[in-house]
Image 1: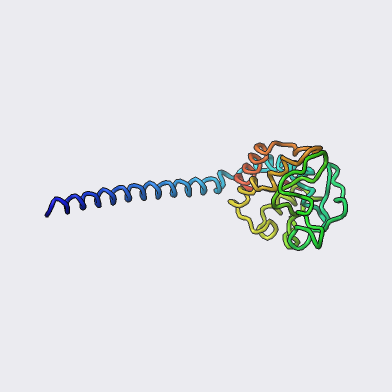
Image 2 (image 1 turned 90 degrees about the horizontal axis):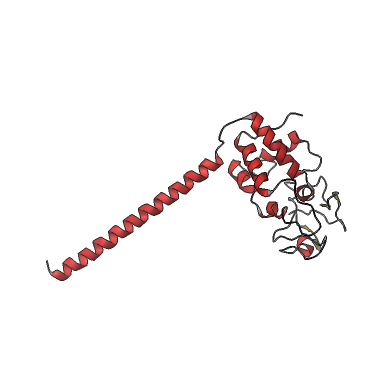
Length: 208
């Protein structure tokens, strides 16, 4: 075997070894990530007392104007800290984004409009669609808790999707509502902790 052939074989073996090591590390990283995700999504331990207690905090946030105004009982969104019907009475529409010339995005821009009580913004501003209305207004704690975990009423969300929903863009917008609007009664971190605790301890609904 010539020296040139030996040299080429050595290079090929080195490259193969490097590729195998890299693949192994990548596989380990993917496995670790998947295990971490599954750990987060899986219930830690069912505890009805802790679960109901956590939902009491969740309920306070969901019933605040920053959440409930976009989850009305009717097809007109609510407005202001007093939850009055939205000025100009825009309608929900099939997709939750308004109808005809009165689309949500016509006034609600991608970011908050500067100024006191001007339209808050988000790139995907909308109400829940007509086929999945997700009403908060008028719901008791028990009714709302049951609704939130029912895939037929929550948009088909499983436990993992419900946990992720705490960081949804429109959910986060509740803590950046623009000038002149009150914030939810808990910080987002506190809300997320209560939301996660409620779900991971069994998602129990309070008694009537």
